[in-house]
Length: 385
Image (cartoon, rainbow, N blue to C red; front, side, top):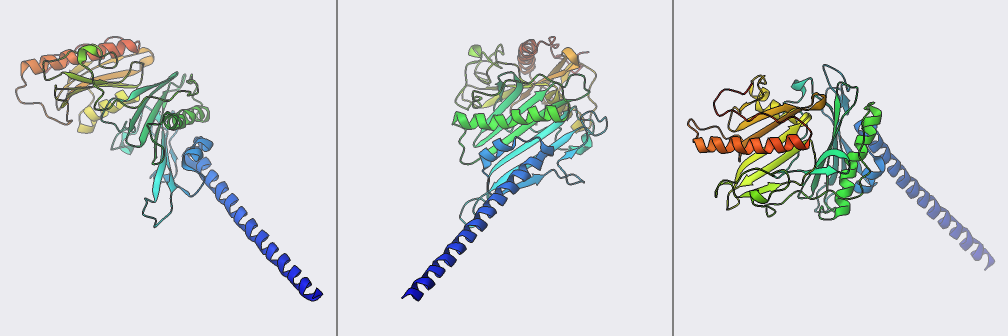
């Protein structure tokens, strides 16, 4: 009997030892996985990502890292003031979910881009100089002391922050596109977390690349959702980015706008009485002015004009001004639909309306930014000098 007890005791000890070893292996495996995941995020985007915030969004499970497709295979090319190849940093961190479970393998991602402004080598970016806002309606100003914009749609939020690097030849544009299926944008806490990725990255990027710049306040309130198709006003009631833009009978009876507040990108969308789009007005400052000129002229094989206003090569008009510090501002009005070509004989009232709408929009925007008023676009085919 005593022998049986001794054998049973030894067996229990052996089982307990195996359990402890297994628990230790599992615990070590989990610790190693978390350490590996943290290390992946720490190394992404040249080390400027806010690691804790990214992990709070995506979790500490299986994450993978997308890399910028350049010849060196790294996240960073160029330098901030490099006259030939400006700074360009980009990375994507993706969440992986259970495979073969009827769900997408990747249901969450954070994509961050840090760009030196302006872009000296445009051959590197044939599809555009800077990330777009990914929205069909006006982006909203980020506010809270940041020179930035926020665009939301479906389950994705896009935030851009422009930093004025004093004493440097280049500025910094930091963008973050965040998409997480289980984080609804209707929840202000989620929108706040998404935009904090951009502002925290901008803060670290300013330090890492020696950009002496005033930073905004830590975000405490969620940025607004982008205006929806149902959130329109009559042009006469516009108080934001469409303020002052005239109506035009039933052809321009609705306006979609962002709230007021300086931002590097402003838009006003106009539509007819049934809600069909009619015109899009856009104001771009700094990198967004550079981007707009690139698409309007250089992308089409034309040199950027030395004039201050004129007709666009396809349809619509443009005007421009130079703000304090030499920052460029570029304003356009185009018929909705994009890429529509100017008719051989455009009706005089269409020309008059487009010029009047652009003049009102550009003057309001420039004044809000403390910039000189841009000239009205000319009615003839000759550009304003």
